[in-house]
Length: 62
Image (cartoon, rainbow, N blue to C red; front, side, top):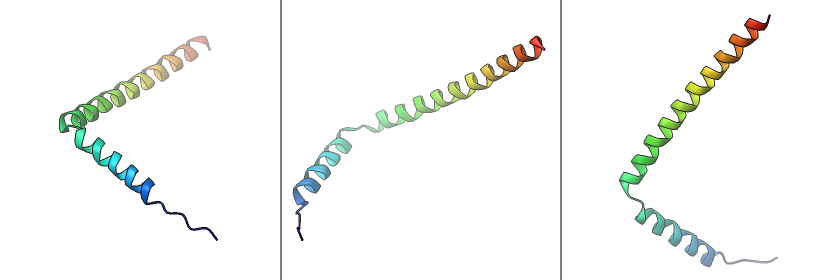
């Protein structure tokens, strides 16, 4: 039965994570949330619009 020490991997991962968290500004997080919201709204709107267009042309052909 082998026993592996994972302290180096855990230390490296946690150090990298803390460094990334320390360099991210609140402004960047807010900008990302805002842009994600705009993207979701545009995606939903275009999906509904294209569905409406598709149904309009299908009814016209019949």
